Length: 409
Image (cartoon, rainbow, N blue to C red; front, top):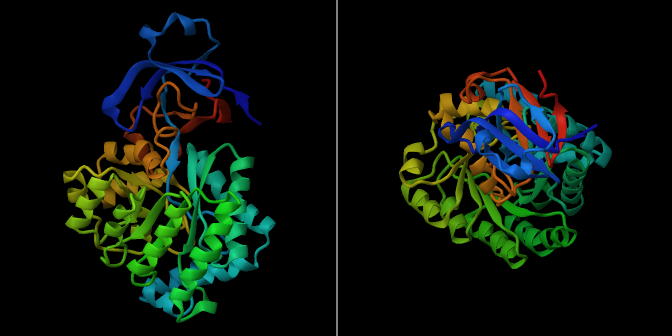
């Protein structure tokens, strides 16, 4: 059950983006017809909003709703046994070569009914929402055939219809080579661009297109075929790039004005320069880095030097990041990647929205935007990155409705 958030939310500390330097100590937000009608210091409140119903948040912090811009949330099964194998020294790549990895999840996802897939995915989504996530990307890529890719994307749309969250779908048909196409990667890419992508886009199920371009994924040439087909359909692209090797994937993506390049542990300086010039967001995924026990860090200093916007996400998936906590990613990004609190917070608000191509909708507290925000029981925004295993989310507002919690003392 939801309740209207219409009115003036006051006695609040406002974090307008993710930067604590852009905070307002005694602020307020006015909510009208599902949107933020005004945001600012209470002593500058326009007369037009003075008589609105009031919501006193008791001096708590209000931030934009959080954005998880890279997830594989819709899948069936789990891969805990593979985790145990990796602890015994078997590499992620070797597991994939043995028929595990992504293809293992493909088998279970193909067998699951739409109802089973929805139920499993909903519980994961609920965990994200409990921490203040109001917008999420959901990829396909565990079907690798038309029927199951459609099933995944339909479930994603259903989750967006039934839960108080903005869902943005991404077609990741070029995630791995399905068993029936073993040794015929080019033929599979032809099926992706000739049948799967145009069919699913025509059904209104696709908001963006992604490719896993790496030595256990698809080549740069194969990736370019998918990107060209996406652009012909008017769809933006993004890429899994430079996670296990540097194959020039990020550089390719920038030639197609990609929204984001994600992972990036092996990204080099020319790739960073290209991303900077193209405006492509770097999406870093500390959950996968941690879970796979990687040692090569993403090139943070280069990304900073060339002012590439940096986003963070859970990369929620069964094989390399079984993470349903975006707040935990803040802590991992700060401790493992040595990101600052400001960089991390901006990475799950403003820059994450940009990575979805939704900077105009999500990620900021600003007049005219959707009324998506979170009330927190914290003394400082740094606490959001400081705690792990603790959820200080007090109340969530999405599209002008109180959808979780109670802001009152």
